[in-house]
Image 1 (cartoon, one colour):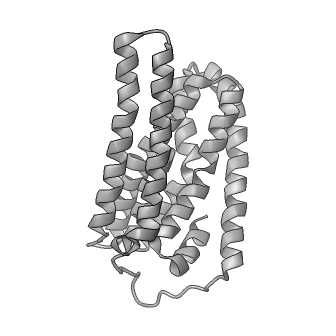
Image 2 (cartoon, helix red, strand yellow):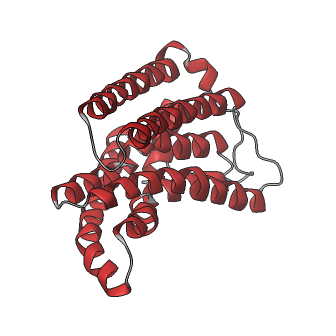
Amino acid sequence: IVLATEQLSTRTGDAIGGLLNATFGNAPELIIALVALKAGYLEMVRASLVGAILANLLLALGAAFLLGGFRFHDQRFNPTAARTYSTMMFLAAISMTVPSAFSRLLAPGTVIRQTQILNVGIAALLLVAYGLYVLYSLKTHSSAFSSIESEEGPGHAEEQWGLPRAVGSLVAASVLAAWMSEILVGAAEETGKTLGMSQVFIGIVFVAIVGGAAESGAAVAMARKNKMDLSVGIALGSCIQIA
């Protein structure tokens, strides 16, 4: 996934490359959510989605900055793009806080019709906002997301893949990651019972970190190559997409 993303970004730019990596890297989270929901693990699904956002926002991005900083003294990224990512995350956080507060105040311990309508309405608004964000970043204001050139040191030369190979590798690797994630969910319940862990703890820590390993690894690898715009785009783009 890391290699394919890097090859694609050289042709499409860091904004599209980061979006592609986040999309295919989030496939495990989607598979985990669908499989766990079908099995009735609602609390695990909630926890795994929140945990995936936190893992990408804090663990992956923090590790990228730290390990990239060990190799390069100064690293730069596009501040306009970073502000846009932060604004989208702020909107998502506020949107998810509203139905929670509404439920706690008016109907704690149960779900009323008004809460259901509010949940669906906010979910629809978040999807519309994400669609507009993609249009803004890739079409109408793509120049604002252009990367600040910061290549690796001299002597850095890599074989260029063809576009079919890069796309095919990304799809194949993401499918394999999703398949392994499905196996992970199947093992999670018995593991939790054996170790005395709750579904929430398993979801917010283990499932989230393992499920998000693809994009986390890509973000760290790009930071180690001094491609910080791509690294930030992968980590924050994944958070926005999950939210």
